[in-house]
Amino acid sequence: MTDWQDIHDWTDPRAVRAALAAGADPDRILGGHMAPLHSAACSGSAEVLAELLTVAREVDQPDAAGRTALWHAVRNWDREKASALIAAGADPWRRREADGRSPGELAWWTPLADLVAGAPGAREPSPEERAAQRAADELIAAFDGEGGEYQD
Image (cartoon, rainbow, N blue to C red; front, side, top):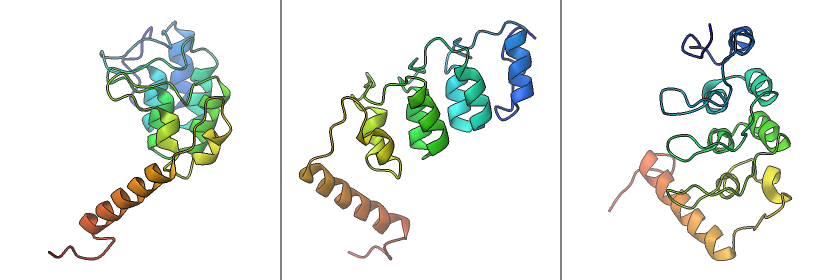
């Protein structure tokens, strides 16, 4: 194996190590969509992500949609992976070209806020932004059933 095409389980560190030993490029965008770091951050294990972080040259490489591996870890509320990526140098404030949002901004609204609170460049949400987020959360809860049945 000299590539990633045979990796279907990003929780299997032996398969990832074998691919790396055979010369697979840890920064290669797979299928034009995402690199192995993204796959590990999305659906892999923390162990596989840690293995890839030892060899990946670009920890903030965006996927085809402009999301970094840190974005995926934060989106999944995965503290262990987000912490590992930040420790490896991932920039929580790197903005996506598509919408200008960053993983750090996303993290403010999750249980991972403490991971980015002290990071260089951190800017806490304003009271207005917090109020807007609370209102959005209330609307989401109303429509997904957690806030009771919607009635007009």
